[in-house]
Image (cartoon, rainbow, N blue to C red):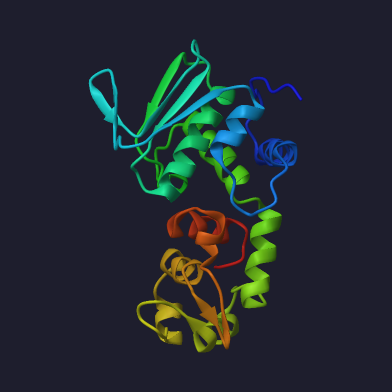
Length: 224
């Protein structure tokens, strides 16, 4: 399949493209390797081990894309969950921006809820999360772990009585009620168990940060 510049920046387009990419790669696990995504759209991809930041002009950044070279490079020593989103963001920029070169700091996953994010950067963020954590898979994994979305007071009470996290080991209903949606979603995305069941944290299952998964859970109305 040929992949070309995306001229319509909306979630439906990104979701369809992400599904096509994951299908063409033939992913059999939840996590996606950015190198596989780059290969499908015929980009060369370099993950530089031992390098924490890359020199781009006069700035040190976590990654960059070069359209003339058809190349994306990321620093190998940044956090793995940040590196995955940074790489996918830069790959997205090759499809969304007509810039010849583009460099970025590490994408941590919370940028999409930051005021003032440039439209093209935001679009690349959206495409990256659709590739890394498709809505249908996130919802399925969430429900498999927790049974139901957290949308009202009764849901919060139920979650609080069953949720197990690393620190603290138990979460009170009062804390989940008063902490705000981001903190609530981060606690849930980082949980290591629910009731008698133990499992890998939801964010870790997809190889993205707890922050990125928290934003994803909120936008999918799985946590409010």
